[in-house]
Image (cartoon, rainbow, N blue to C red; front, side):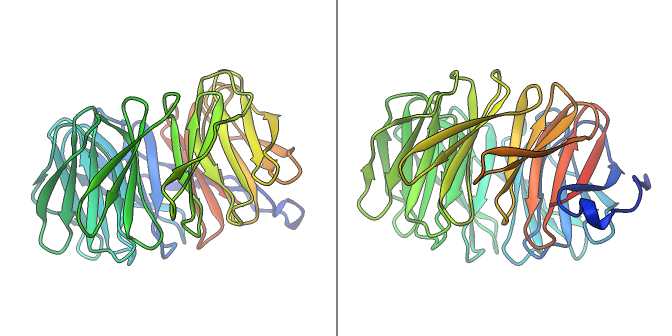
Length: 348
C-alpha cells in the first residue's frame, strides 16, 4: 500500500487554507466524497475508465483500502451513517455497494443504461441513480438491493440530488429541463428551462433549487413549484457547477474557459467574478464561506473569501487538480490531482 507523504508541519499563521499532506493513490484520481462522520474519503480512479475505488482514512490522511467494483466507475455516494458507499459502474450498467466495516463489495446491482450519478435519501433507505442520456432513474432499496425503474419524460443528465427533508429528488436533463421526482409516489415532473443546465444545487433549508445555465443562474422555489427568472452571471457560457454557501446567502459557479469563480449574492442579485488559476474544473465551499477552486491548467487551488469576493491565497498543489471535496466534519478540503495520482489535503 502506498505511504502518505508529508509536506511539513502547519504553521499557526497559515491555519487558514494550509496544505497538510499529499497522499499517493492509484492512477487518475477524480471524483471523491467524504463520509458524513469525517473518517473516510472515497475516491474514484480513472473517471469512467477503471473499476477501482480507493479509501483514505481522513484522520490519518493515509490510503487504507482499494476496491474492485464494476467497469467504467463514475460517481459515488455515502449512506448517512457512513457505513456504505454506492458506486455507479457506467460500462456495466450496474451499481456496486461497498460495506466499510467488512471491506466487501456486493454483487453488482443491475440498473438502467449508463449509470452516472447517484444520491441517497437523508434517511439512508433509498438511492436514486441517474442513467445518463436515457429516460430512466433507477431507485434502489439499500437494505435489500431491490430496484425499481422510474421513467422520466426527458433524457437524464449527470446531476441528481435529494432535498434535505427527503421528499423529492431533483435532476437535470440532457436537454433544457429540470426534473422533480416525488419520493412518496415516484411521480415525475419536467420543468422547461431557457438554456442548457450545467450545474444543480439546493439550499440547506430545502427552499430553493439553483441551476447554473451557461451565463445565467436560475432559481426554482420548491414549496410553490415556481421557476424564477434567469439572472445573468457574466460567465462566457462554459460555466459549471452550482455551489451554495452554508448560510444560503450566495450561489456560485466556475467559469472554466474564463478562469473565474463567479459569485452572486442572492439578496439583490449582485454578481462578482473573481479571477482564479487556469481552467477551474471544480470547487468546494467550506462552512466558513471560503471557496476552493481546483485549477486544472495551472496546478493550483485558489482560495476565495466569498463574502468579500477576494482571493485569500493561492496554493500550488500538483499536476492537473481536477476535483475538490469538502469534509465538514474535519473542516478539510481534498483535491484530486489527476495528473500526479495524488490527493492534497488542505486545512480549510
